[in-house]
Image (cartoon, rainbow, N blue to C red; front, top):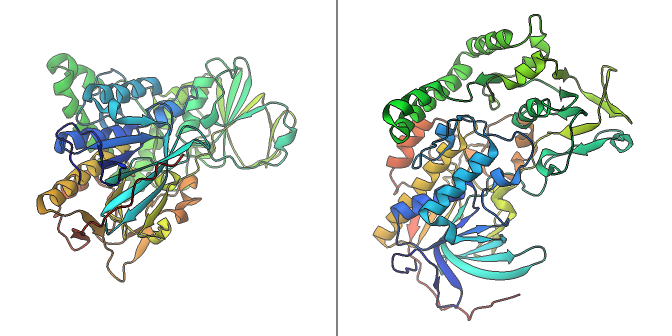
Length: 511
């Protein structure tokens, strides 16, 4: 791998192309965290971050719908290396965005980011032990440039940034009101004193409903089937107390580990004793909703707790909006849109001026980039994920996919740390290539073992997982913490080599 002193800056390879040791794709929460870990563990390695959008922040800059917030506590959703110092444990999107950008600025990561650089194609050459990456600069069509790297770390998440999932509804062309998707929320949308229907039952819908209900005439949350929803304090009382006693920095790891343990216990209870978990959730709902409320119709899912992600509301805001009459629930299938609203399968019609389709996301692997290894295109669905982060048959590449049963960042940070361990191991032993190699006869399973609709719609376009370690992705942070930090790097699943470089052709700049 090329070196450039200790600055971490790119160098010009013999081919004339710009070269970095590590190329990180995505300048959101994950990409900034990956860069921080790389700088800490291997400060002499050069790197760059490619960001397709014009600003950093990823999800937390993209989504602008009212009330956007974290669906995990910030003590675990925040970085382990930089304490979350704000009082809100369930934080708003703007605060999270400031936190991400502040982390990048504080560590000097922001000067490595290249905005409006979308990766189009990445071609691995085993002879040269490097990726040649084709990048579109600016908009579409923009200009095309090429650079190389020794290792490619994809921190793009797994959904499309340009649009969300919006099903086609019968008769929607006849609706005289406005239809919007949260992923393309109009900045000038005025919902004051309007009748609003929010279609959906996930985190986006339960965030939008109480926020819109503050000024809308009425908000109806229309769902096909219920989701498990629990209320947590917006401010963690333990965190507030400890911060006063021992300071924010010292309190952070204590509260972080408390929350990790509580979340892990909640998940295990939901999986091993679902009846008990259901009873606990139902008991909270009965206390928070009006006496006699039809909990079973609107808040009794058909699946076990944690078969889909548990949704969290801060300070019972959704249930307060329902109790106050500012919001209501409707659990039914949509028959058709009408001129003035939505007609349900039951025959009931709900009037609306605005319909919000919080109907989920469209998934996209590797940010939509085409991958080739020695001239052969990689079909993601034919690869198997090593530890849920590297692809069988694809050298020197890692991707990040966070937990579905805990904070995304916990898994993302483990992946970044493991990447640094692999890079250090390769450097120490003089290797230039690491190839995850799947054993014959591996029993395959979906990589995302998750029943949410947005996952099931696209799971066949993603890598597989195996049934045994290290091809089975972990979903237990405490176990993964030990595995990712201490697992042997010379196991039979990772094959290391040091190809002899071949002379390269003169650079092609392209335009």
